[in-house]
Amino acid sequence: MSSEGQAARTDAAGWTPKRVLATRSALTFAHGRAIAERAAARGIEVVALPGDRLSLDLSADPRRAYAEAKATLALVVAPPSKRRLQPIAPSADWRVDLAEGCPAHCGYCYLAGSLKGPPITRVYANLDEILDGLSAYLGKGTVTSRSRSRAGEGTTFEASCYTDPLALEPLTGSLSAAIAWFGRWDADVQLRFTTKFANVTPLLALDHAGRTRMRASVNPRGFARFEGGTAPVARRLAALRDMAAAGYPIGLTIAPIIAAEGWQAAYGALLDEAAQALEGVEHVDLTIELITHRFTAGSKGVLESWYPGSALDMTDANRTTKRTKFGAEKQVYDAATMRLLRTFFEERIAAVLPRARVLYWT
Ligand code: SF4
Image (tube, rainbow, N blue to C red; front, side, top):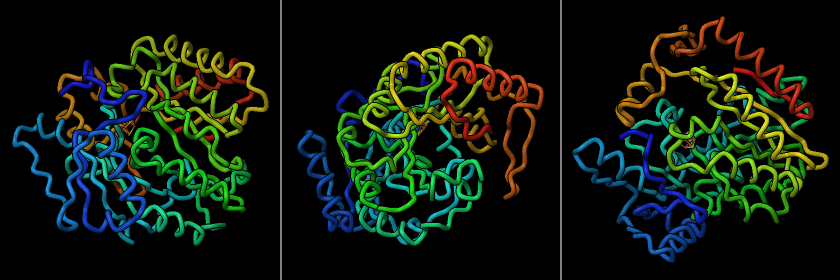
């Protein structure tokens, strides 16, 4: 199933899964019941499971199984092991998961290498337990807190590692609840999320106290064929502007940066478009994160099975192997390509978005 031409399954009202599978334990939490009720009110089939085992019952045909999994939301409880936070360099001190999985169909999705099994979206019903556990990590940052240039951000918590929380928001309300919770947490902390969606209206009036940074995850318009089911880039940038006007710190996640033919013109136009979208917004606190395209043998295999025939280049051209500190290998752009890309972005950002602070390049 190619992401090119894939019908979008999300709209202004957000994602509409075909079915919600709710575990018995998830429905013992008020947040879980509220999600199930919201889904039912939208006419989505909600299956209350007799226990906590997810019986997915997916088709034997891999393409149909992919489509069925992507259209399934599972309402589950995050066990204590999932609530123990991990550092998440270079984005944040800690990773906090409100959900796992994403309904969109991006041909390069990093989740293909991180999450195992069919690509269903799991949403956590015990949100209060997840948020109540965060105070134990205050002041114990191991990533941004140790960086002299980023220490001003406080202890940072990244909510977009394993999901796109805004994609799920109309059904879950989890992101709004987390933003309001950080707004009440009178401490040197920051919730962070990045998104390829644009439905921010419910977030604008929240009492966020400046403790949440939203970033729009963007790529040139010509790459939209790799991002099935997401919001158009122009709408993401308009949403970012609205968030800035509502007093949120904001950012751009330019990811993944793809060195395909014509990339200079494409990314130049993207930066121009971002600058125009933010023009006239006063006192904007704008950061930029620059993440080049990479893949592992595992993620490449999964993505090729999900999106056969994709035009995304995952060959050896311009690539070199990088070994992580855990011994895993990934394919990144070679040094010469990296140098070209990095120089281009540094120069263009300084020219068109001089107010922006680049947080990292990777
Ligand atoms: Fe993956 Fe992000 Fe695309 Fe969702 S929006 S499929 S998390 S890359």
